[in-house]
Length: 355
Image (cartoon, rainbow, N blue to C red; front, side):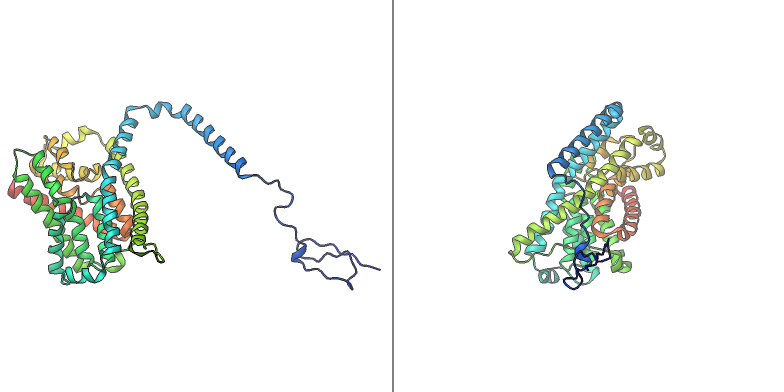
């Protein structure tokens, strides 16, 4: 007489005699989707759009007053202005970095850049005078230089000098201060001094574990143009996200800091220098335009204005975000404070000397 066995998840089930067949346990476990109604992709998309529409309607009814407030409109304007101002130079820097990776062999950099830090750092600082770009462009370029074998101290010197002493920045400074030509010389001297000092400091005390570079996508075949395209896409998406983060922080602080505070501290020379140094970090203005903002701060002394011009291209919120995304947090927490202190000291000393 046949025997019957019933099983659920782990026990065999058979409705025939054991002499005729034996079934495996796993073949008799029902799939997880049994008993469930399947939803098509179209149905899920419709529900998703419906949920978004409901959220937008509720958000509009609850936040319409906030979204039309003058403070929010000012915040949105500043955020969009920062991103649009920096984006062309970021794309330029990413393209140049990708070109260095794809078309310039590492052996060329080994021959072109001196191996001794005492020579490589000043050469890299002066090389920054020939690249027309802002600080957003210098970060990916410096990362590309390190990937191609350039010493980190020299690449970081270039990172600091390029946005501060390039021809466009110096011409803009001369236009913004037509009656103070010495401001152009003071900015060049102070910025170059900071870049070289930080480069030498990194060569002496910097550690390899503090500097992390994101991995580039590996391209199988396709030649140099495929490497160029993949590198540019990777770096642009990576750096663009951190640019947005920095822009959000800068826009928030632009709206949150009362203007009356700046006027109150302008009367004290020491506080004025520190106030404009901190303001340069918070405002995150592109180096091609910061001279006009500095010139408009007429309540402050020329020395404080110079400190604003020296600090801004080297340490600001969007630049800190870009550096954190490119080189890592361990790098930023050491590099940004040291650069800020050196920029304030150099700006103040050169300002009291030349201005």
